[in-house]
Length: 397
Image (cartoon, rainbow, N blue to C red):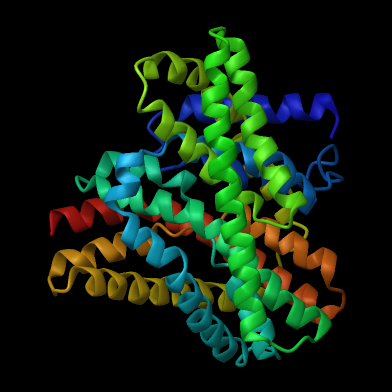
């Protein structure tokens, strides 16, 4: 992209963030995506090419680092059991059940293989809380809900990529499923990413003490965010989990030193500007790119799949709470409903879609990508706009 184009998109993002200060009824990501769809019909923007590499290597490391660094270590310890369960076993169970639902629903409209249905389910598995966490913090008195949604998203981004890789390999290359090999790959990629991220995060948290100049400390945080990601990928580990682990480790280390406010002030001053800039560019580009894949023939089945996936997620989240709480009461299911509705699809799903497009050819693959893109856009719009009314409704009950 040209510098002029980036400047124009950033200007649009500035206007959106400035006009809608509360971001309750019209969350910024929704507005940005809709504007991006509109921009795609203007000749100046119609030739923009968004690639999976652009999203994965440029946008995700920075956004993941900000989320992880700002995430409270205390909140992570408090909700570790539910976050860990939902982002691992819960995610696998969700993909399995949503895949079966897609296979059954899709069979009424077009021909879809069971493996293809599971690939779509894996694409829809990762959640993107950027448009709802701030709303949840304002509208829900239970602050743990926002922490669970945010924490689960950071971890399930990494686990969903591993799951997608296994399923897409079966779909594109007609590979058979080797459960032990797939589980071994999952452990290698996930554990390797976490261990590398924790190590690098700890080392950089010590290196930051070498200089007291805030500009250089910010430079180190950039090295940490993108360096941990690329280093992990070079070893075949999860770059997503490495960056998340590094950010959490850095935050945890800072919370145990006397000059915590000094270091956080330096990093927050920089990343609080970078985060909305990356978000503005990313969601505008998603809207521009989505227009190429959206098909009017897909909307009915896309709506059915969206609400089926929300229902499945509600069952999985509610059952997970029930399992951990060991007792039944209405508050659990209210909490589960709000968390389930907050499981919005976003940037990671778009990356997986573009990756599938780069891997697969043929009419069937194009149909799956078009269908998945439709569900992602619907999820961003419907769930983002519904989270504030739903939160208020449940609170009034």
